[in-house]
Amino acid sequence: MKRGGLDAIFFAVYLGQGPRTSEAHEAAKKRALGIFDAINTTLKSTSELAELATTPDDAYRIGKTGKRVIFIGVENGYAMGHDLLMLQKFYDLGARYMTLCHSSNNDICDSSTDPKGAEYQGLSPLGEQVVKEMNRLGMMVDVSHVSDSTFYDVIRLSKVPIIASHSGAKAICNHPRNLTDDMLKALAKNGGVIQLNLLSDYIKTIPASPEREAAMKDIYEKYNIKDRRGMMTLPEAEQQKARAEFTELNKKYPIQLATVG
Image (cartoon, rainbow, N blue to C red):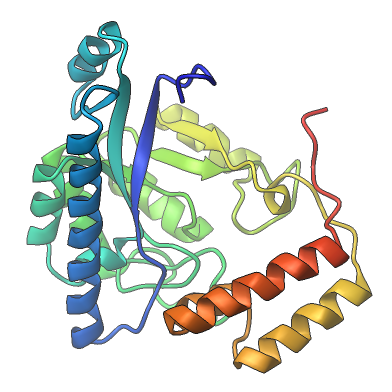
């Protein structure tokens, strides 16, 4: 961060979407709190280099000391289960935004990329409560990953500006994760902020590669998963093996990535 001139960054308390059962939600909460603990431990051991900020004033103060500024966000509302009190807990631990969902639907809202399609046509009743509680606490509502209908539900319901922490423009790359021009205009009218997602899939239409697709299908069948997201459901040892095979696949059949130019 120092060499690159990056003054501040959000550390993400990220959880991939898992089963939507009471037991799984409890496990997700514990995993999320474990990530908060890991961030706290890291910051204690690097206190001469970086410091947690929970307000703009904190950030300006820390920046003047020459330290890097660390913020915290929660990536995927799955981490809270059905427990609205967890939002207060996350806030008290330093979180200042939460992405409502990730690559699949959860009990808060519809995702833009769930292969099963929409469940709620936007926010669920729980999701409406989540947006209101985040507004009350002062946590930014992040609409990256959400479906278009969820986006408009949040715009309608939120009393304060919202963010799209890592999205893109459908006019540039027609991916369901990206926002239409109408959505971008609505976000601007809301006073919100969008930041770019720099993954090539979301900023460039990648040319088809039958050889690569066939090799990926072989890996999916080998590990009995449907897509890359399915790796998150594998045991840790299997995840590592699958990731290693994907790394080799990328070397053999490289993707024509987007460039800065």
